[in-house]
Length: 347
Image 1 (cartoon, one colour):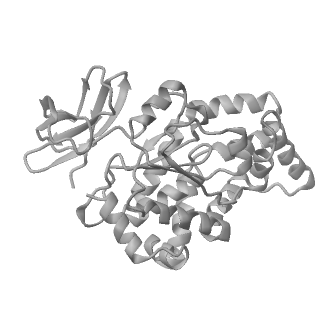
Image 2 (cartoon, helix red, strand yellow):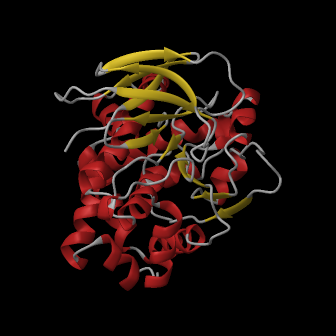
Image 3 (cartoon, helix red, strand yellow):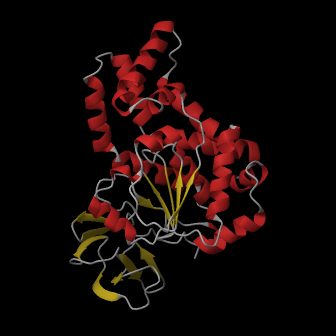
């Protein structure tokens, strides 16, 4: 199977197209104002596997139509340039079941909108988001309220209540005490001899997402909301857009028939997007403690590893055989809802 191009905005209005494929074929590239744009603007024709194009300033989120001799498809940049946010992503473009593809501009995932700058909020307004699913707790929301994108957007708070003990200590702290309280909790466990391998703590949290009643209730409601024909475009987010959002995004894409490799690939984009944020976070922790074991434990909570989301997927597959069967048997999602989601989000 020939691989598709992927596109990234490498400079302001300059987009890099790349594909990891040995096949040479001519492609004609067009600029689109939306995925449904039927009058795209011609940009260039090339046979290169890597090329760039500068589209100049535009007042919309750009998409690109790529036409080949025997096929055509639309693509967009996956991580979006929302000023102030580091992990706002479009889940479109993944190959699903029966040769279909997840639609662009319908399903988004991100970190919280608290950090969005004015220009970032202006960008978000162009995405026509109708529904926001916020996985954060009351404490998180009160400390870090989302910026208002549009008053007509429906927001649902669905807290899975699935944090590790250390993170719970952080989330319930005041803003200025979060980091020190988290560190103190870890030191307390270390001194008592109850501090377990940090990766095991996170892996257990990902199993909890699949098994705990609070989590099943939250993610089941997320799917029911997402299956509402009036819901798109849908944004789901937590604080950093990694764990709770990672599990929710995996369920949605998994129901649509996206394969495990792409589910893991989508999850791992968070690693690249949060590199600078994680560096800054660790520098802050190092000012509060020089204990190497504590710092390693702290890093485990902001780290992104493929085995984290793979653990959730494997937990589900081993017991239920498929993500679809899991959401039916454990989350109360009906076959009609699943069919509706597929008709809404696949093309």
